[in-house]
Image 1 (cartoon, rainbow over the protein chains, first blue to last red):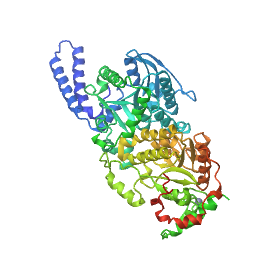
Image 2: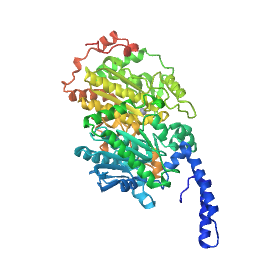
Image 3: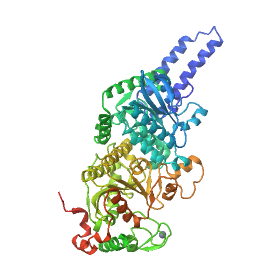
Image 4: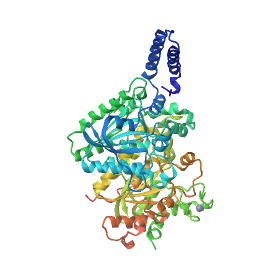
Length: 320
Length: 315
Ligand SMILES: [Zn+2]
């Protein structure tokens, strides 16, 4: 563990002490520190549980953005076989903030699309921190059309702070590209399942997450605006992000109550980044079961039900 | 002579002359600073007679100028749950709503109506920027769905005037969900083969631009309207540089292939009639085909125009 979040500071101290002890023992074989280190481990585990059993919405935002959280690429590598990336929007460029292509999921051919944030400085810049430009959404539209034509289910993995607010992106029609991607989600006659694996940031997320079934990882978020942005507009103070995160109801748990998400996928204790394999396989199991729910539906029925779902959404508020 | 001068103008005259006379008879143009005579400005649909700057116009005033004789029938919009998230920032959401209702005299940020425009039956929806920045929440979503459903029922085109800062933050994720919801509404029209014409007015930004406002069969904008997804301030912060003049304005978008037309408000009605009639396969409009303005004015007191059925029910 190298990256601790601010609220994990006491945890960092205990885990650091245990690590120090073990390092000392490695250097000096006569030292017997095992009992002491084990006690520290226990203390750390208890504290972790304490911290994570009731994360505040703002802390969830921090966990959702954790740099070591598994990203789209990790899920694709672990859960899919024969992944064949398909690039480009056929108009302007290939947007690396969006990855996607053909793949097999449990042997079944599918189209997989997702936002990729990158994992180190170089790859983060390449992927533009997961913030897509119009080309990214147009690539997604193209892949969804391909899936529709050949009857392949579409699986989307959502993880973006939002669409990229840049000059070129605006000139090339960021809004139109997002609108068309959402529109395409509502038009295709194949199963469409979306998992929010980290951040579901505004329109940039909706463009992929307008789906038959939407699931969210336990500590992922989905919101109309970032808590910082909301705080600076409504509180006139971007430091009020804790209050904004609270008010926006952006946690997976609240979104399930609102009917926006169908399933909350439990994360390993301490967040997906503490046990990436467990988190990834939990997502795999959810994808499998959500796809199974849609099996046997005709294209017409899929489209009809998907539209109905969105027309009805929100009519019951938190009591949904 | 065109429709505006022949027909709409005298009509508007008669409407505004009957309103409460504003205490301040002059108002200042936001564009050039010229002091404009209030009545003259309203006659010109809040477009500066000196520099052509387009100032905001309420949906009600817009409809009055759009529909024949200023007569239209409001279409009911299902009322959504009030304050679904129990949202509270520095103020409670219901308090902000009440303040907006009091300030505008309107229920919410979108008005939907049916009527005739140059003897062409249409359904129209207009967003009200003066109502909480025109923001898109459940009500606006419901309004667009109601407009689309009514248009499909009557087999009429839908003309939508957008104006919004974006989504209504106080409805959180439910405001975001209006992006797919309103997109479904647009699909209803498309599948029924009915024209969906969007007129983007100043400003149209955020999630509104990234959904129903960009999905029209024909995309028209008013001059100099700000139209964008991310606002210029956000982009300047990201880039750390000033943006060029006119960036994200209607003419700029036209140049970049994002719009069909940029049309001054005073010419918009004629243009909408022309386009709509062609798309609906109707013969060209003839000015002489219209009832004389005087007859209409006598028949319908404008103060209560919207409560009266626009067309006598012809079922
Ligand atoms: Zn002026």
